[in-house]
Image (cartoon, rainbow, N blue to C red; front, side, top):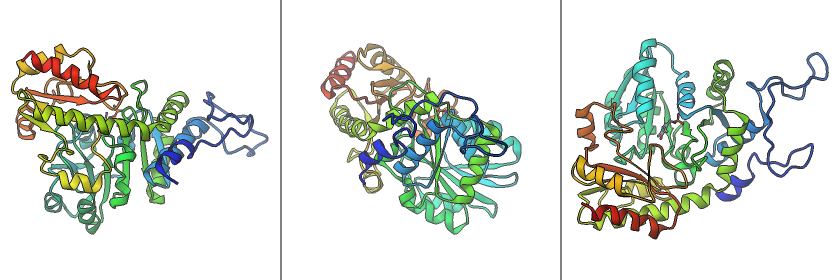
Length: 379
Ligand SMILES: *Cc1c(COP(=O)(O)O)cnc(C)c1O
């Protein structure tokens, strides 16, 4: 079955009691049992909820995975994944990872004697060089936020597997429509469903999908034991969101390319970051492992004053953090999403004061470009 068919049907069986075509929101905390030890497979809603389980089957199918576990946020999903790591073990992480991931690893998990090394994973050689006898996981994000650095998933998986380490990929920026990391040897995929999977900027959630049964059982055990589950209503929203994922991603990708091409030609724009651009140093790699380039585009207008003018002159684009929704969002990484990153790290990564990031939505492409054009005219 094709992706769009799977998106609409996987996990979305008609309700057995009423025939309801959409999976109902099972808003219950517990389930009646027929007798002692006799129940229908549902005991308590932290442990089992049909709406959440439908979503887990749906997204697992979209990533080509056997198992899925939905959480209350992307960070809760990442936190649960890290419970595969024990005290004394070592994890290698993409150095340009999502700020919340960096914060979780360095401010919380490091207190439990888990060792982290942050390296530029766009060169698998750096991963190989960072491997230690106790390395048990390599955690990558590709493309990264906001400068769109791409990691070769197959190369990193090969290096990690030779050392007996699992590979986790945060696939939030691409969605399974544009990139399916498990096909390149990655072991575990995590998402903030808050972004493209839900797609409508109206819910926060996360998911972990994987194939290894032992690891899956452990993540399921953590989900039930620590309890950061996704609510039935939020599960339902994401389940509704993924039905249009293929259509939405096609349009995000189409407009993303058009916006990037417009910005690249604009005299007031000094540099753009978009793997779909021929000027991106990893364009060929992105083309090889992604089905498209998506809707995330960053561009540099030289300094803070210019960035402020653009951000405050746009009318259609909304100034806000987050990404992946139907509406175009525009943000300033240096003072918003990446404010907590050390200035020297920001400079090294290219997150300058003049950098502006857009999450290109699915409005009419011409309207998005016209809005950016009139804002850039003010410079
Ligand atoms: C937003 C985001 C997260 C965190 O997800 P929440 O749902 O906000 O907890 C993790 N990784 C990436 C790449 C993100 O964009």
